[in-house]
Length: 121
Image (cartoon, rainbow, N blue to C red; front, side):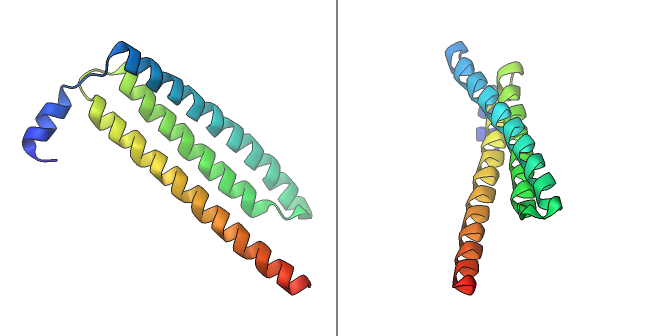
């Protein structure tokens, strides 16, 4: 952003209905983050006992942590004044990172599964 865009964005505030949508999304992101961390912790426990889910559990915990960060940034949009655009951009950056982690982890899991299947057969 150039200086004029930064000054314009610094004073922008979302409306009450827009904040309601953002708040709801923040809540869902936090719930998903907590669920992912709990699921990941259970996978790590199984993985440590030889169940083979250790890596999946670690990825779930990382994803959950990132989604909780997304939720915090979205909540900041709603509860602060004067920096809505900056907070929203931070939330979108974190959300993009969460999606990237999920894509990379899924592709890696598919590749590992294909190699395991070909090695077994």
